[in-house]
Image 1 (cartoon, rainbow, N blue to C red):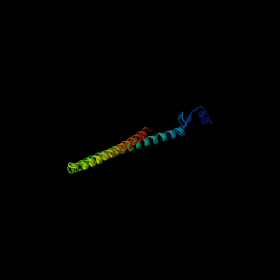
Image 2 (tube, rainbow, N blue to C red; image 1 turned 135 degrees about the vertical axis):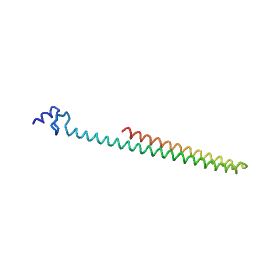
Image 3 (tube, rainbow, N blue to C red; image 1 turned 180 degrees about the vertical axis):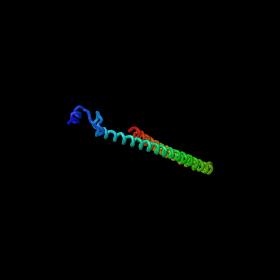
Image 4 (cartoon, rainbow, N blue to C red; image 1 turned 30 degrees about the vertical axis):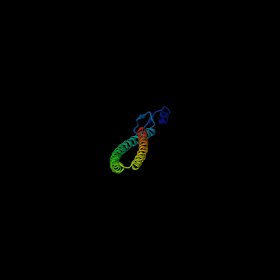
Length: 129
């Protein structure tokens, strides 16, 4: 009967007969929620560091690939230029091919930038919550 009167007054007695302002069951639920939140936060930080390392590796690989593509294109262009220097028709064809290639690379760059932006937004959203 005494505990009911204390509860009406907003006071509670826990298992250790300590006087509390919060119901012990509610306090336990709050503690569990806080523990799970801290655990989730740790997992999110781990995910962020893992994805950060992965993104760095992918960017490094992309740079190597891009360098090799440019080198290969330079070699091809040098060979084509040697053949096409005397033939204006071949020279025009080479110019058209290079223009098409440049446009394709521009579109590819835009797509990669869009993907990068979406991934950054996703990571930002995950880190904010």
